[in-house]
Amino acid sequence: MADGSIAAQAFTILFREGLEALLVVAALVAFLRRAGAAERIRPIYAGAGLAVLASLVMAWVFEAFFDGNHNDLIEAGVMVVAAGLMFTMSGWLFLRQDPAAWKAEINRMAERAMSAGTVLSLAGIAFLAVFREGAETVLFVHALARTAGGFDASLLGGLAAAALALAAMFVAMQWLALRLPLRPVFLITSAFLFVMGLRLVGAAIQELQEQVIVPVHNDGVPELVAELGFNGSWEALAVQGAIVLCAVVWLATRRSRPEAGVAVRPQASA
Image (cartoon, rainbow, N blue to C red; front, side, top):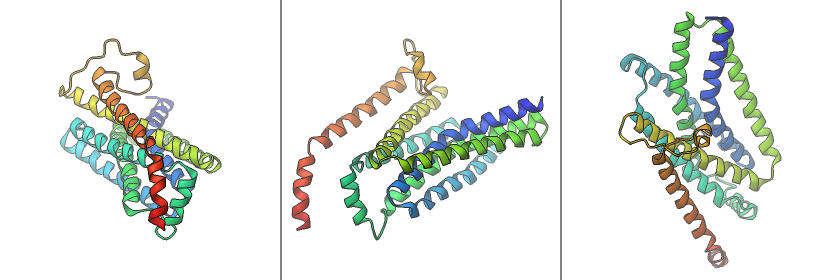
């Protein structure tokens, strides 16, 4: 196998598998920086770091006990938990996208920055986002190294180039987030996490479909759905549509009672 081909494959594996996890971590870090809680970023990095270690362990387990094949049911479970955390955090961010409301909350958080539960949720999202991709990345790179005759310079060079590309994207996201107004940062992060949650739900359903636990019907589904990275089956679209409908109902319910919340607040502070 040519050195250029090995380097390209190594780059593609790490960049493709790492991009989605990096976008999630970068969005969470950017949110904390703009929220004035930069000191709470460390748990997110800790969650991502632990996920890397857990990925190495899981890759060894898959290699030793499953002949290098990942377990679809385990992966589906991780995806569902990650999606649930992302939907929860998406709603939490949406509720705090009003600058006036956020400034009032920052005053209350001056001593404790952010609640422990919120920080743990953010760290959990980072862990699951990285863990979901990590074990597969290790297995793919290990398989490539086998075919290439080991971790030679071309393979390591491809991995290094992918790591640099991911790092550059991370820095660019932080730079952009620090220059955007507060409301767009919250809304964009909220929408991003919600869409990622939908994608994870579709991916979890796909894992179950591969195990023939859930049927597959994709006749008539536009090809654009799969091209955008979503599960192109009616079963997945139905579940995702139900989630979107629940989110719309929740938003409509929240919007129908803002005055009541404002009216109560002065009495509580009096």
